[in-house]
Image 1: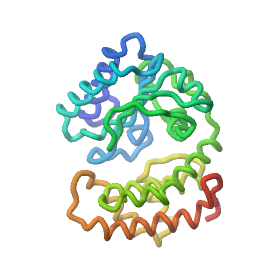
Image 2: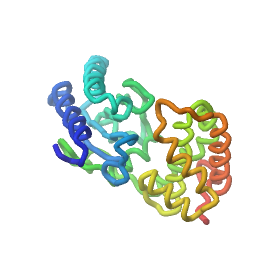
Image 3: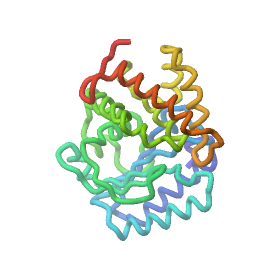
Length: 265
């Protein structure tokens, strides 16, 4: 499947689809691609491949074991993409009722090995992005997978997630990459609550720098740090001071609480 200009990306996506078909067989309902590969600004050196695999019922431990082997094989064949492939393994019924109750979902993402998690209403922002931007690579249409999510629900969830970085930033003292993630995530959250739509972190960073040039220096730094996922010669505590200040400035200035955002600029 030649969905991108990058041979490795095409290979990985094909390997995921074929591997999932073999493991889930008739239980595989659909496979969807979203993220920067779809909405733009994909960086082959550091961006992730974001996908959703939908199955007829909740994932089993036996399937998790088989998936671990599949993912390790892909990572061994394409080592530059190790820890850069994200797949959510969600059931049709779980997605249909996610607002009412949590369901068991398989998940592999950067920094998180494949495991089973509880997914509930806090996943609205993720499912909204699937609803609005994902392309169907296999199976049933995405509209038949996720119940409609209103924009206001998405914005409210983004506000809550942004506010969580008051605490989350403390865990990034030893990682410039994590600090960059926090800075660029807040840029995208700010863009979203002001403009009512989701764009890539890079596009949001450019917008914030143009709109609020006082933050240009630290955002430019973050655009460099994001390429330093596995190693960095920088003093991460010194950069942490800059990242922490940015996070608190943005939250104090534009996000009043987890439930309400200050939309005025």
